[in-house]
Image 1 (tube, one colour):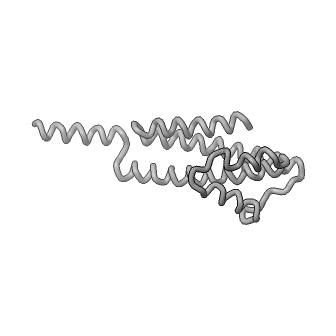
Image 2 (cartoon, helix red, strand yellow):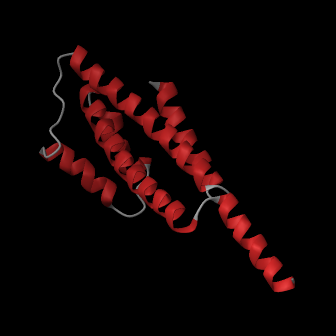
Image 3 (cartoon, one colour):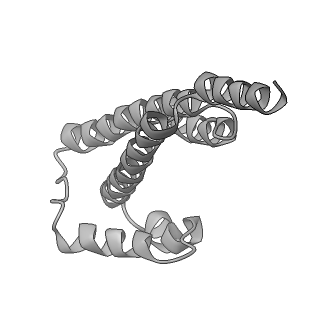
Length: 140
């Protein structure tokens, strides 16, 4: 579980760093992050299943509360600390499941925008070729 969480976070970070140079690399890294978070999501579901604990319904009062917390501006770990540090493990697992779903939703939106940008603007090599051709036409 720890490795999946670290991998998800690290690939989001590396994808963001690659954004300035290569949309293709950013897409790849965001997809790896997405896959790691899916693995983590399944680990938390397994945690609940093995203990015969309930998985919150997406529209449950608790899940909606967690989603509303995430929709606030400047949300950080501190926004959730009271709930994560004081609740029993099954509640924390459900909170984290909600947060993974929110993160996956945002990553899916990012991937759609990146794919659209590649279709509209091309990849790095295409942009460099256009720039070279443009420079040659101005000097030639």
